[in-house]
Amino acid sequence: MRLPLLLNAIINKNMALFGSKKTPTEDKKSAAAKTTTEAKVVESKKEAQSMKDLYAETATVKTAGKAKGTVYKHAASSRALVKPLITEKATHLASENKYVFVIARGANKIETAKAIQAVYGVNPVAVNIVNMKGKRVARGKIRGQRKDWKKAIVTLAKGDSIKVYEGV
Image (cartoon, rainbow, N blue to C red; front, side, top):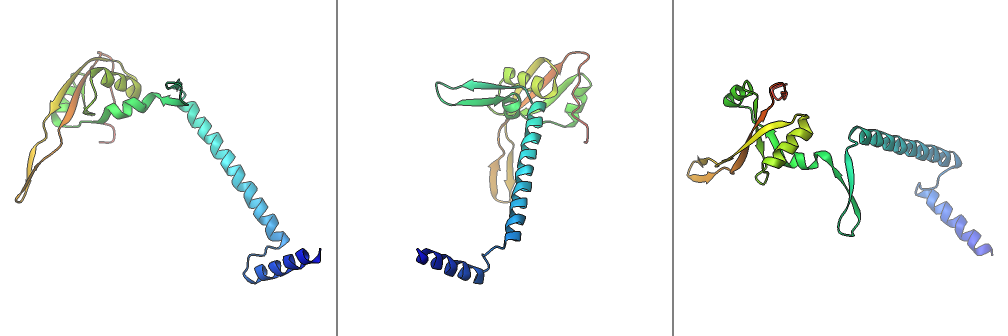
């Protein structure tokens, strides 16, 4: 019966030599630190929930008898639209209510129209897509070619507009 008590005393004494023995006040401090970190975690979860409220347009889907997954509204649009194309010609087209975007290579007119609706909140009247060939380039003796890409010219209704050129 005394042997475990002696072993505990020896272990505690040795641990104190290595600095791992905590005093009761240190235990209270660590407990207080744990509760503050737990409070921060709960607070961050609340913030995450409020962000979910901002992007509330989600849908839960069942995939062929497997686990449920959440599909976000902007998920497909972020894959379809790469970036707005800002060139001199695109600026002139904007005066005609036509906006130019670089889109993903696999995107089609329907996906592009849905992406514009989801991201910018305007319904396009027409979407025209152009396959652009990558330019041939040379760096000294090394010759190569840039990637091929797709360009979409999106026509909007008469009163609609997209704020593409803000901050440019």
